[in-house]
Length: 387
Image (cartoon, rainbow, N blue to C red; front, side, top):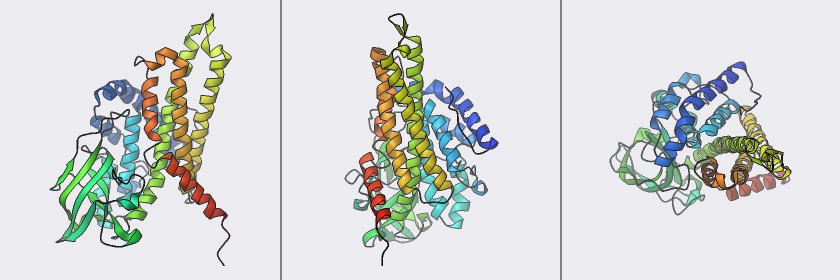
């Protein structure tokens, strides 16, 4: 059922309506089959790029949509309600574009951003490593100065779009100490020694390819460095706050779909002479699911509006990611329960939604990490001023 949204302008309302139309016509009919076949929907991303949906939060002067995050995230949610893998892809692509958009040179912004945010290319974000996980400072993949640039070696793990992306915003250890030991690079798969490993075999989101990326003495031209050497940690962590909002919107869209499936089934399925939606046990379960979805949506919108207003939003982004992804896991699990035995079969999408929800509590920083981030913010904000 359509979500009743409060949008900031008629233009935003038209954009969300267009998104629903495209998603209903082009995403919803393909999702189940592509997920079963573990098939990467490259042509769907081209379609969304042609519709102007691949670069919504970036400035119009570089080919973006010039939309506030409040609007961009609701577009992502609408896409996720039809196909979570595609919505995740939009969120990751936005994350991959952000280093050049926010820290790139004027030449990089003029030369690279228009095609990136216009949807002609699709991006990946290469930060995690198998041994480090959320401990970004422990990364080992490195780049050392070489003639006319850098030489990269090592491996990145869990790269969304790995093997399919046209560019990779990649974070590598560079010669320095402490927080200045990491730098950001714009890499492309045509560089010698750059390769993608076999895709991971995952529980869910199987239409979204995930793989390791390997660097075997990859020569990086000097103009592929993004920002100053040693600024990589700040670039990565700054982008992750926005990325967490993207995942929050994906999680809410997925939870909304699970709620819709459960409500439709509960209205149509009868036991003891009446629809199961009229039985208090099921009605209360549906009510709790609806409350979780709407609460999660409100939480990510609060964070988005702070970002749009230029206010700090890191704590709010972590809260949104925690609340939305935990809600998605709970709501999708309850949707399977409402459908009973039918929910455990592939005749209904509820079981797929449940599988897809689980990883949202893990990527973009596990929900345990989000709790640490929130706690540190609270302690910092409560500390008395120095002096």
